[in-house]
Amino acid sequence: MSSDTETSNRETNQKHKCEVFAALHAQDEAFIIPNPWDVGSAKLLQGMGFKALATTSAGLAYTLGRGDGEISLEEKLRHCKALAAGTRIPINADFENGFADDPETVARNVLRLAATGVAGCSIEDYSRDSHCLYDFNLAVERVQAAADAVAQLDVPFQLTARAENLLRGVDDTQDTIKRLCAFERAGAQVLYAPGVRSLEQLREVTSAITAPFNVLSVFFPGVSLREFAAAGAQRVSVGGGLNYAAIKPVLLAATEMLEAGTFNWSADMASGAEVQRLLGS
View 1 (tube, rainbow, N blue to C red):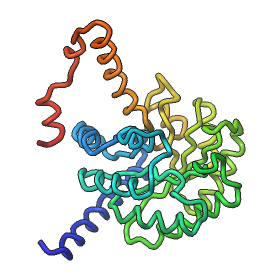
View 2 (cartoon, rainbow, N blue to C red; view 1 turned 90 degrees about the horizontal axis):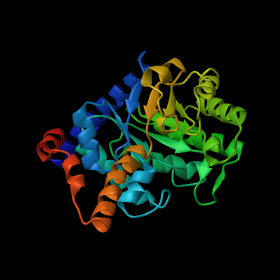
View 3 (cartoon, rainbow, N blue to C red; view 1 turned 180 degrees about the vertical axis):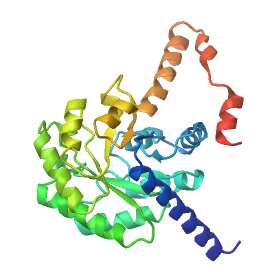
View 4 (cartoon, helix red, strand yellow; view 1 turned 60 degrees about the vertical axis):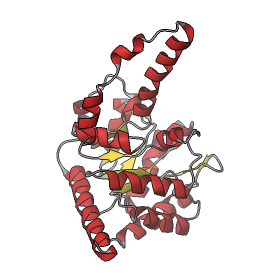
């Protein structure tokens, strides 16, 4: 197959994934978008029947033995390209702060990300280098630049704008709403405030916006997809939750082996045949 044909097929495939992803945000029902941390976990979740997936910055960092926020742009792009190529369903990228402070570089980086084949991405208003929220005007300009870049694409790439203040120790729901509304006006198709922690707060936020809202479920133990939808959420993600949930049995098994010298943990292993089936092998 020629390189031109391969490029054409990849672009056609990405366009289809973007259209599917956009349709999920436009439907009446809310949907769950779990967060795999590598190609294997992505293929398992795809095999289970999820309709879209999202990357996790914390999960990717874990696979490389680092902390959240310690991944380079090139590593992020390689990761997203691998997940997009290894799955048949839309992938949304946790693109952190766009790996730049200034709007122009954020826009360029978003275009580089789109070239990996993902169907959307999120941009947050928090600088991981300076460890602070961006000034309101700069935060809006960054979203505007990313939205203008996305508008150049020939696919309906979904741009999510994240308001990080509630997650970063700034307990100000009104500032969250102010930022989300400004991000929506700037062109973001999806909005996200990962620090929302109650259904009452979720209703307050979603009643002030019109764009689809993503809620982070790990702060809501016991709340169902139906309840999230009733409170105004369209998309429900789990962040690094699945990755941390997968690590827990490893820690318990390691503790048992070290302290008791036994292997009772192996009774709870997943079936190798089932894993192979879900991977499509």
